[in-house]
Amino acid sequence: MKILDGIKVSGEILRKLADEVSRLNLVHIHPKLAVILVGKNPASLSYIKQKQKACARTGIEWEQFDYEEDITTEKLIEKIEALNADETFHGILVQLPLPKNVYTPKVIKAIDPKKDVDGFTAYNLGKMFLSTEFEHLAPCTPKGVIRLLEYYQIPVKGSEAVVVGHSNIVGKPLSAMLLNRDATVTTCHIHTKDLASHTKRADILCVAVGKPGLITADMVKDGAAVIDIGINKKKDGSLCGDTDFDEIFKKAGYITPVPGGVGPMTVACLMENVVTATKRINNIP
Image (cartoon, rainbow, N blue to C red; front, side, top):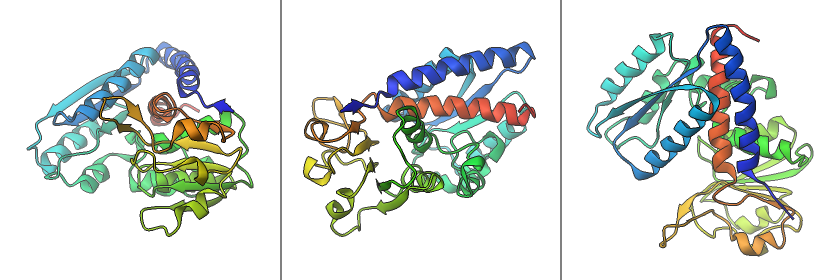
């Protein structure tokens, strides 16, 4: 059994990025991220703090724009368009979820695809579906999962991969990225009949639903790689994923802990996307 240690792997990615940012600084290029936060959602504040720390570790510059929950979709788009035009910014991140009064698809659509470091615009998602060579700004969580699989040399080509969850942020893009690497992919969701019949076949099982204990040990194949992307808060305030970690740990070949698995990888891949966007905007190979 191997723990897939996202803290260790993300630390290595951030160290390499810090070197790259230093090299860019030498030619007077300073990667800079704009972060838009609407309201004071505690989970959003916590995620932003982690992103800010990663910026500090890599030398990426950071500027945050805070708005009250009653902001209109139009006002937010106005700000995004100003950031699109501002050459000092290389990445724009709108922290999700946005309040119900803001129309999220319209806000995401307003981001210049060149600065879309979350990888959520239709342009970057569409490109990513073509092949691995077009995954320049892929969504950060799926990208983090792929990075973990690569680091631990878990074979993807020819494997049976099952993704539980079909959100536009994780499930769908992750399924596409696994398919780009020649896995046979099954995508499951809330309407899937007999979920266990699918999960039991998986060599690589990725779960991103947000439901504690959804996947139990009897739903997992012996020796499988289990990637738990869910993050849930228990009554005692501690965090857990979507799988029964303790029981699956005895059976799986690899498993990600929660916290300390996919979460840090998501943040590291966001930093990677900022550096990629900076280089592409400045025509640096």
